[in-house]
Length: 512
Image (cartoon, rainbow, N blue to C red; front, side):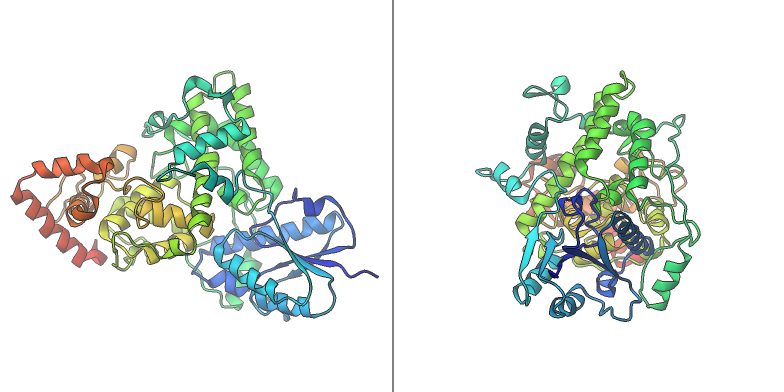
């Protein structure tokens, strides 16, 4: 009898439409594994660990139900050596398999680990595509061949053309590629977003497993009410719900923040896409179909804003990641070195915006992109927090955080630690932006219009101090020239007051 091929499925490779699964035969055995090394390489949110394990277990059952042979190594399996390499070495040395195959890992460290394993494997090995993304790292490189720097807009347009998304011949629908200027509205008081679609389930047994195996985590979970979609069917229902109830107002309010409406009109599909339960193309196609049949109920700025996040930013970030790793992970353009304050772990701060964003993250393992970029990320940039600590926090706390998408978003777009590879400027602001886009400033201990004094908002003081501290590095950047022009108009007395107050804030940063 012919020995089967061993095929590895990682926890973020749950794509039932992959060509591997289109035929059923005894020639392949699939292996999935829950390993402590993956659950603890950073301190993850407990809901993130649970989501991965639940999604993997349901995917195992789905494969078995249609006749595939699956070996599943659970966290408490006595034979589990708690790492991909250690488990695979035993399997490959067992003599039970004719060859080993695995899909391209999305994370550099896993790719390196499995590549090293394959080179020393006692049987033939083969690497195959995940068949998931819209573009490849080579496509990314080809778009920018001959260009001095990356721009997401150029890349986004090429992806739109490649897949004929919202196009009319060679031109974009509406004769505009980007409606971002119409996607920056604060949520009006009279607008009440629909609640997010949830899938409550009891995860008490898995919570107990993590406790028994001493897997440390952050955040909170209600063991009898885990709400995230972790199957393909649930993910498709979430997509349908988004298209029907949320997409009509998505673009307009995608940058808004609100204490009572945490997810607003966001799809909450990022985990499902990042573990490949659904593909980016089918998400885009479903949204575009909803737009086309809406008879004007969904306007072009709404659908374009959504398409841009997936066909633009998501694919663009992956291209940056694979074209710049592993050095990208060490970049620290602004030489930031301050430790991450305690309130990123407990939410105990008088800064209303930071408290709401962090508490939501601890409770739900989720915050939308503006909360991540312009509240927590903005604060870390202004305060000069070490990007290594910022990376670890973002990678651990969010359910959708996988390094290929987290790292360029955090170290690049958020912290400007890459010196402008991702973004053309640091995404920093004073309290004015936060007040404009949210209700966070209402009732805050700090005064959003004040720069000085004990009650002056730290975002205001630190914004101007950030410009002064980094003048030599940033002053010639044309995207932030306005800030330096305004700074030049300030009196020396006010600038000294800002510097003195900022020094006090940073000295007592743990007390904010």
